[in-house]
Length: 121
Image (cartoon, rainbow, N blue to C red; front, side):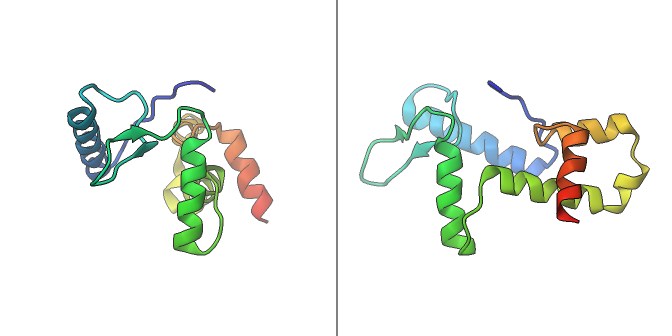
């Protein structure tokens, strides 16, 4: 799939991401190209955990297991969000184009979102 650009609708999340980028830039001396696979510790240098595409997914799975007591993947969270999106009442009034854009933020198509919802039934 390659690099993706995702619009952030939440001003709070956008602010937090800007703070995170600023912190990584100050700690490493250059703007990061990978945002979510860094190791920070008070007594060690800041290091990039890994640059393979599964790094963030593995970290998220480990964290979800510790917090939720159940292993979840990036796709599990995407699937849950797609279902919640489709069950939200404004979704029924959206045009197909608006639905495509909403699902595009989850890096899949409207059609894929419908399949996710169908699998729950």
